[in-house]
Length: 219
Length: 237
Image (cartoon, rainbow over all chains, first blue to last red):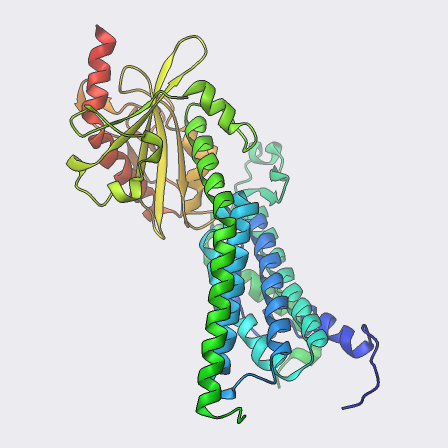
């Protein structure tokens, strides 16, 4: 390891952020965190808040684990990671309940389920345990954003075609498909709000991504 | 010290758990008053919504004090008033008792123009967790004036639709009694007849939540039956 000070946003560090948003995306490439992609994407707003919560938890978990990585006894490292993730999730839940009560009512059980999000444990194991704090934070931001991006894309299509609306934080539910369409006989596709359609939308995203990026195709 | 040894591992785990527990206990204590206030305000917003009064977290307390204020009380299964503060009744606790032993809170709303509405509080089980509701009844003891429902963790877009105005507006004008006999309201799949006074449309894709809601309605309307009948009798006098 070199003692030279690396710039904060060196090319290598930037790659930690851009990689997971694009070709190393946790959902579409690594196929992690699918469960929550099914659960919270029927509407746009919960998907956005969920993404922010996951980024927050992931950044702090990666940072803390990275800071104490040399002191963790390897035999109980998974337990240590779980305790820290669980504590962070409880903190997020408590803070939402105190300062954003409406949002916390909407997200309800899903906040607790962040603990089980494979992306978080995956990044702790694969990255934070072996890297310095700053790259770990960048890695967390990148993976969290990559996860959030897919979540928001899926939620956008599911809500648009399933309910004909888009729900944005602070703006409430917006009718996007004009009433004239319904008068002409357009019908919302109720199938879109059922969980299986989330899988199909994720599948389409994976298909589009792989057809544009040949490196991702397994031989 | 050997970082792979048993002693180190034990001490590490113990210290970590104590630190995390202390931190969480501190945060929970510090945020508790705010959270309880939020819950109380949310309950007042729900009650007000059932009588079609829109309130936000900023003005809910004031509106509640104006419209309901001290006019809330507890009734028992026989319809008699019981001692106690209606707002503090925890239906989650009451739900575990047999219907005959429960306490039933009633919030009497005095609307402009002297009209009185009676808000009943309900609670039941959805698919993932508890669901609850407030139903406002006219002074004839049978006609529903408004209803609002809430849930802890129903699926967004599916069961969670019970908290949407579209679903709740269906209840306006429905009847709990069919010419004096207890009937409650059915939540039917595949299109309720809008003219029918005893049924509403279920939430598509939310069958178990809809079923739970229907059970909650009949369970609690049954509990309030004596009270509602007293209301009806009083309205004839």
